[in-house]
Amino acid sequence: MREKMKAVQIHAPGQYSVDLVDIPEPLRNEVLVEIKSVAICGSDPGIFDGKVLQNGWPPYYPFIAGHEFAGQVVALGEGVTKLSVGDRVSGEAHCGCGICASCMGGFYNLCLNYGRAGSGHHHYGHNTPGCYAQFQVYDQKALTIMPDNVSYDEGTLVDTAGTAFNALRLTGVVPGGDTAIIGSGPMGMFAMLIAKALGSRTIMIGSGQRLDMAKALGADETINYRQSEDIVSAVKKLTKGYGAHQVIEAGGNSSAYYQSVQMARKGGQVALISIPPQDGQEAALKSLIMNQITFHGVRANPNCSQPVLQLMSSGQIAARALITHIFPMDDIHEAFETFRMRKDGALKVLIHPNGDI
Ligand SMILES: [Zn+2]
Ligand SMILES: [Zn+2]
Image (cartoon, rainbow, N blue to C red; front, top):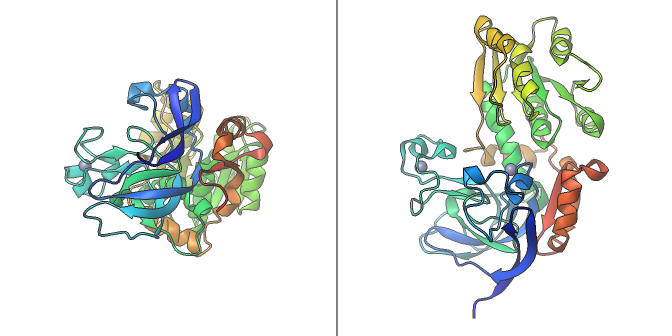
């Protein structure tokens, strides 16, 4: 009989429970990871509630979701060269096939074999089982060894920090210039911390406790969008009328998408992380054209784990400060409720599938 583990299984939209299931076995190029810590992602509630079924997430029921984790390698499949038993690793959601034109170019987040069974492509926690479990198997490509001074809890944040890093790598950062960030959630917070580490002045646009936290973590300027009816003029005012060199949109609503274009300076760079809305607004498009602004869509975080772990390790980005709550896996419902309702200032909410670490 196979050994069993606890895992959070989604049985139907909105229905999930902690069940006993078989511990998976690593196939070729895979390792078995004991999951030490998991962070709830902003995209997880949609997967649990069946709101993104059109994307094939999840592809079947029951399904184990989750993609922001850190853990320890406990067994190796055949052909594993990069990792050893005992390695402390953080994970990424995207694992490319490795041989298509996108993967060969380093853009495994855009793998041309996305979702094709048997190709080697995985989108962990989306179309391949994920980390709300005590153990999970991963392709060695999806794991990065963590520096000793980065904790498992901090390691769960590499996925989010990596996506913010990818956005700033796409826009580039003008040292001494201005970066405006829309959205003071975990993604916006990491964009602020990384832009600052790269020598930019930062303007954070958000609200409530999260905005106070951004200030405490070093945002140079903050704009409360609930108090300022026009965040575009507020950013212009703080930048001598010119607008920001880089604008990172992580606000998750349609007005933020357009305001991001309008608050960029001439020749500016805009990166969108939230899934954009369908309809258009002419004023923003006019800004885009007249000011020759470069736009970047940002999908996940290819080749970002290594530099992000370095920034965490050296203390240049204060990842630990973003972790507000930790729950054992049996309290998964309470953890989701805390995250969803932003209870007690919840920002990043973590799960420890194997108890205390
Ligand atoms: Zn995520
Ligand atoms: Zn590929």
